[in-house]
Image (cartoon, rainbow, N blue to C red):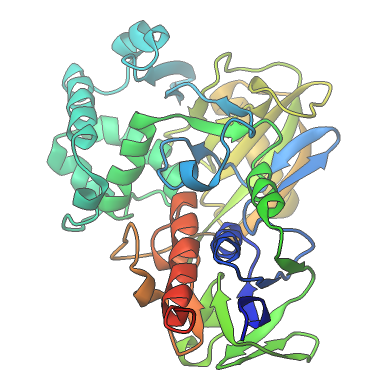
Length: 417
């Protein structure tokens, strides 16, 4: 049997599924990707609305992700980079803090910002040094505790945690209590310290688009939802049954595989709302944070502060809500607009689009950096990929896709010797 004759299906054309297909192609196979929606990317998609680029949720690529350099051409993505810091809206004033070692323009605003104490700012420098000297394997081998416990044990004040760490990393982890694993905090903090947060000029969907362009011998079947996966067989939502020699599940597997149905993946959700506005309240390429305990808004950002392929006539404002307090539709929009006015002085904003994303990031314990290829094998013919296998990040999605494909190749190694 030739390599091209193997019926290898990948369920899901997200980042993980696309990487799995690339690895299989590199080794002479011609996989088939089954994608439920009309385009690739999974949770990484970009729409054009009223001439503005709207990502599905506020997302960034951290350029220090090791695996990104292996599978992405970062130069061709024309990455637009954020400054290494944030604007904190406190007592109706803006306070800018950042990493002056990486951008000297932030040194005075950081020193004189009414955020944290001088001791806190010295501890940030110590945290930077500590994590710079810590390898990824060391980080993911450390005992897990919550991020909140880690920060308290590091000695940060309650004020610093409340005003900076909770809104900043709450916006990354999509939960406002910093219950996320300390391993994940250390990993993300290290990545921020060693590279940039960036968005492709064409929006985040340029990442999966680039991966799709790399595929030469892979068939992608769009609008093809999968109902269940079993040994040697895939059942589609339209009732069709496909025979499959091997299947890589690159989406949440508990929804598709019988013996995993009692182990559903839990998810953090969020709401992202976009507004058109006349003028920016943040002049630098910085994220805005609201540390108010009871606020709907967690993070704001002006995507129009970065260069984009298309841009509307005015400024574009993105607002992230990680706890919508049960509000939806017009009630949520009105609540957000009221807070923008009260806390940020942002008025006269025209609502453009609301993305409710209930499955934004998987809730995981015992997070890992990578998984050996052999451990991606669930049965004789089924392999698991997706960031749910490791941790909630683009880096994890790529690594999990690579590992699942390598696990399948290991299984076939003896056949082609």
